[in-house]
Image (cartoon, rainbow, N blue to C red; front, side):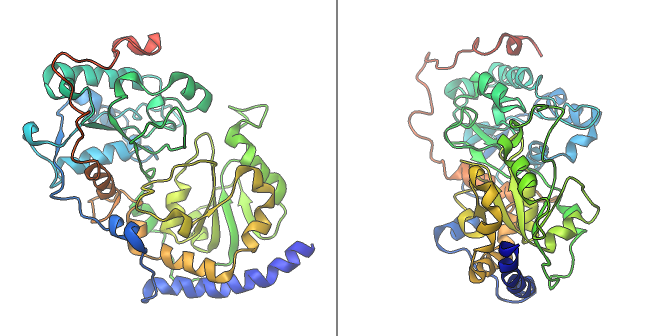
Amino acid sequence: MRRWALAIPILAAVLFLGAEAQAVQQGHQTERISGSAGDVLEDNPVGRLKVYVYDLPSKYNKKLLKKDPRCLNHMFAAEIFMHRFLLSSAVRTFNPEEADWFYTPVYTTCDLTPSGLPLPFKSPRMMRSAIELIATNWPYWNRSEGADHFFVTPHDFGACFHYQEEKAIGRGILPLLQRATLVQTFGQKNHVCLKDGSITIPPFAPPQKMQAHLIPPDTPRSIFVYFRGLFYDTSNDPEGGYYARGARASVWENFKNNPLFDISTDHPPTYYEDMQRSVFCLCPLGWAPWSPRLVEAVVFGCIPVIIADDIVLPFADAIPWEEIGVFVAEEDVPKLDSILTSIPTDVILRKQRLLANPSMKQAMLFPQPAQAGDAFHQILNGLSRKLPHGDNVFLKPGERVLNWTAGPPGDLKPW
């Protein structure tokens, strides 16, 4: 009780100043991101690169979406919206000879279970089939074996194409993608499923839906810590301890009765509104290190508390995550209350001012239509910063690097 009693004056101060920080969004007290990160975040990629979009048969993309429109609404939908964006983007070129980058639109997550979860099992064969197609019908893949190509792979563990980490590691990245640039939601340092040079992006969260749930910006933040989601996954991890590496279970066991923590498995209709009334929003790992909560927290100005060791966050060269978020090691979850209540009020206020910066929110979203500074443009910025291509991109005549017969036997079957 003593620890909670000490937290009450801290919480009271945060709530008072939290309302002030909310009002900041309508005033002039937003804080610009300092240094080169702010400049990178506001870069305009148009005129700095040209992208050729392969025209693939619809079975690789549009036909899949027509069969199951739910693919537009799940957190992996970035691959669909990136395709749509590029088709009308100013960086698109219809002349492949002048292209800096080549994009292959394959909707690898648009194979859903009845409950709406993507099945990754056909994804490697689908991707492999698409690569075989472009290598056969265009000369550009073969001259670089994909080193000037990029693919959007938003699965839980990217191009390892599995939702369970142990099995994803066992599979590894699809061998034919070893030279390509991967644009993926997954990111964890020194991990088999994150190759050097990948561009990590936020998962898709519906901008229009979030916009519809905005509340007055001067609403006090009366919730100290907020989280809604699973703490255990008994169906896939019946013995416990594997899901979220035990971090979510630790949150529940340690803080389910703590009055500073509003945590539950319930997902109320006021979920978005509740995040806007909260000072801190927990963003723990689940099966993968990331989730849409990170996007929602940033958009709603709730300080993200990131619990995922060694995570590589979206657009880390442009968004100052250390300045806007709080990082808590998985082993320190039992100390979460003391960690958060010990953060000085002025530090909290500065994080809230940074989160109130519109460019910060915009960079996390895939709006329709696209808008300056959004996630689409941050991806293009990442690609443009890789130019010009180095001498190691293009192969010598007759040179081959990739092994077309590598990988699990099941991946080599026709799709």
